[in-house]
Length: 163
Image 1 (cartoon, rainbow, N blue to C red):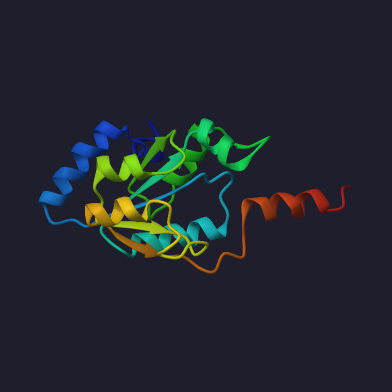
Image 2: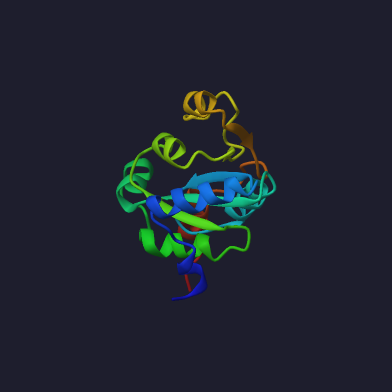
């Protein structure tokens, strides 16, 4: 098994790993996204998330939820490829796939200390903010300004001269 693949865990495995880490005083940070082709904005978002604690867990939308969120023809890469790419990043400690449209259930199950979202959100617009508040999870907005996106990347490729 490649090192990146070894970072991809089931929800059950993560619950056990994170409970042990918390007992040893480690701060757990959770971030999430579709990551349908990695770009610099993703790297900066996850780097900013890692700065919020000791262990960074990244939820990657499964193909079913990524398709519902992003629309026809998406995702471009399948869930296993996207999970492995995210897992290969140095700042990422663990990756988990999830099929839900938001991460409320994962926050309930994993109980991180911090829920990190990108700068396309505000603390008040984070979809899971009520659940995070109820569970005592701090919401952090991290990364650089949202001036790159997978959609914009695809559009520039479409417009590029061919040949």
